[in-house]
Figure 1 (cartoon, rainbow over the protein chains, first blue to last red):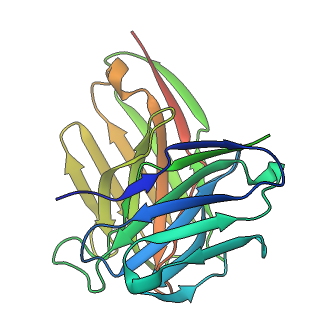
Figure 2 (cartoon, chains in turn red, green):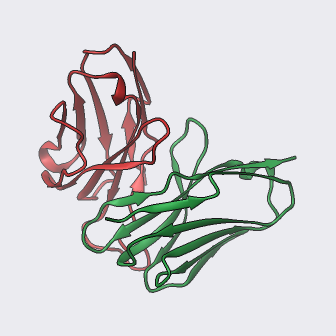
Length: 118
Length: 112
């Protein structure tokens, strides 16, 4: 079974440009989460989708960030316009809607997208 | 507000030694606690997940304990190897929402 995949693995853009990150969750996982780690800080929650609906977007830093999950499958995270402080690693995670036996509601993480804003 | 603290921030030990990484959290109302490993430039690898009702989990040379009442967890690594060098992250998931709260991590360097 394929794990969580993210594209691209690395993106380098200039300040003011737009970047779109994509996450494909594990097939059948209705929960999808975005997290990010900026330099020197811990990984922080950005938002949570249940299917196509935003369940919790309390971690989104500002309105330059837009997350979508049309159709409840893959998700995109757009940063427009990008600023220097947006540089970091953006992780996506997914989990099933109901906990599986023995595993709880474990979230499975993708490899991350490293974003560098120059 | 849940906060996760990891001590030490960095650790260097000679190969073969046993070692303990520490994690503390401020809100004991957790659903589970997870230890991850992150290699430079790579993603997160889940090592061990402990449900709130459990006290410990073991996988190979790794053992993680959980004391929910005191808000502490330890990750014990036996007979350390150079390949264990990585950043180890402690993370908790709360009952009130699904978000995972991470610590800043412990950078571990095993000296050959």
